[in-house]
Length: 70
Image 1 (cartoon, rainbow, N blue to C red):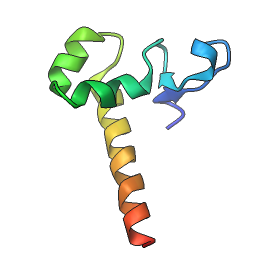
Image 2 (cartoon, helix red, strand yellow):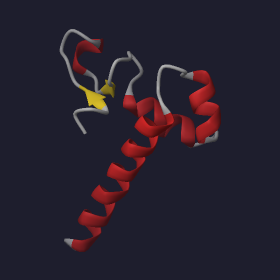
Image 3 (tube, rainbow, N blue to C red):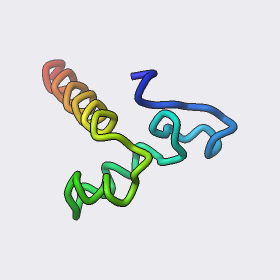
Image 4 (cartoon, rainbow, N blue to C red):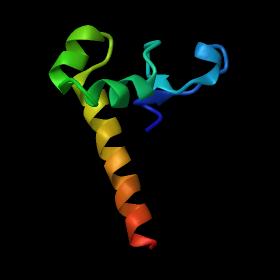
């Protein structure tokens, strides 16, 4: 994930952002509550489709792991 997400105290006070951008990762999840991935990518052109998909897959894996621990 280090190639996809960057956490640096000098960039947005350490908020996780997509690597090589100042776009918070949280923005993707907030956006997808009401819009499509394509619309997110159109509005945040610094984020690649590959980065967005990698974050979504990682989030899905974390949910799967959490469910398996129940």
